[in-house]
Length: 217
Image 1 (cartoon, rainbow, N blue to C red):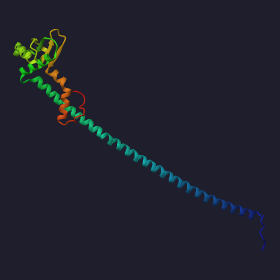
Image 2 (image 1 turned 45 degrees about the vertical axis):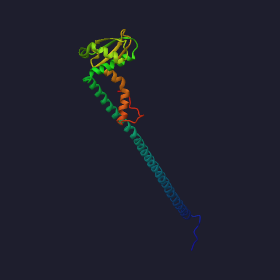
Image 3 (image 1 turned 60 degrees about the horizontal axis):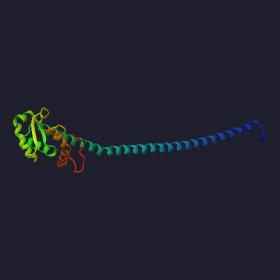
Image 4 (image 1 turned 90 degrees about the vertical axis):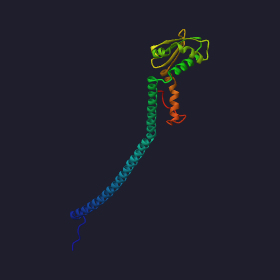
C-alpha cells in the first residue's frame, strides 16, 4: 500500500479543515462561557438594582408614614385650638347680647360703675353721661348716691344724657373733658375679656392653667 504524501493538497486541506474545526469549537466554547458569564453578571446586577429599588421604596414608604404620623398631633392640636376659640367666641357673643338686651338691677349697676370711675380719677368736678333711657328713669337723683359710693364727699357731679351710651353703663369725664373713663357695659366687657376668657377656659377645663387660649376675641 502506498504512503500518502504529507505535502499533497489533499493532506494539507484536511489538516486545515481539522484545525479550523478545532478553532471553531474552541471559539464557540469560549463564546458560550462568555455569554453565561455576562448573563450571570447581568442577573446579579439586575437583582442588586431590584433590591435597591425595593429598599428605596420601603424607605420612602416609612418616611411618608412617619411624616403622616408626625402631622397627626399638629392637626389634632389645630382642631382643638379652633374648637376652643369657637366656644369662647360663642360665650363672648352671648355676653355681648346679654349686656345689650337687658341689665337687671340697672340702678345699682350705674351707681357702681360711676362710683368706680370717679374713685379712680383725679379732680373734683365731673360729668356723668348716661343713655337717654337711664337719664329719664334715674336722672339727677343719682349724683348723691354716686358721690357717696366713690368715697369722695367733695366731688361735684353733673348728670347728662348721651346717645353714645345707648347700650348701657356710663361715661365719666372731668369738667374740662381731658380725662374720660369709659365704663359702658360693652366697653368694660372688651377691656376685661382677655382675662375673662382665660379664666373661663381654665375653669371649664378647656385648657390647662398655664396654657394659652389664643388671641383675644
